[in-house]
Length: 236
Ligand code: CA
Image (cartoon, rainbow, N blue to C red):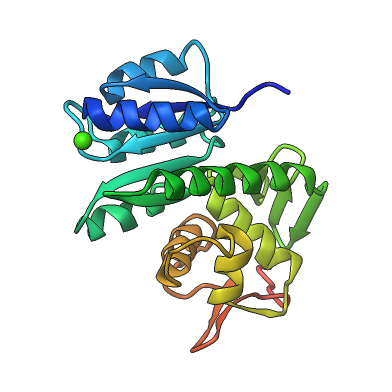
């Protein structure tokens, strides 16, 4: 079995070495970069199985790197974990809005880091095994073999998490899914995030698929409970 490859961007040399040493001893291949520009350059040649991005970097910051990776069709489905310093609450949320899969707050334990990486990779591969063909409802089509979303035959660019959310809601259309359920199913029960993460991703998804995101007709909010994909949508 080939080892999973991880690209790490971290400008602090001692943290970079610590991460590399620990991940390699857990069986991963690791390439380290001192800045985001070098990482993006490398991605033109080859792509990894996962990105670990520090936020505070010389040159472009980790959030910008995340944005660029998610905009590029070569890298947009590769999971991303952000490294944030304590107190960067805003950056965490922003990172998730940009499509990062998880974040880890410094100082972190290498055990926690390894566990998070394994969990994210496991979810990514599990998701690859459970693909269906197409799921559709009133103008919204998910082509699960290509992992693409269409609205009225127009392709909609979505992040990996937005994709999983939409798929989960559409597979359960007409049924309310609680924030906790969505968080558990999509981010994993071992994810240490908050239900606000779900709201943030729903908001972004609505901006992409709803005519009027403030008055959504596809993804309904069920106050105090969660979200439901409306099975009675009629757009005609
Ligand atoms: Ca840094």
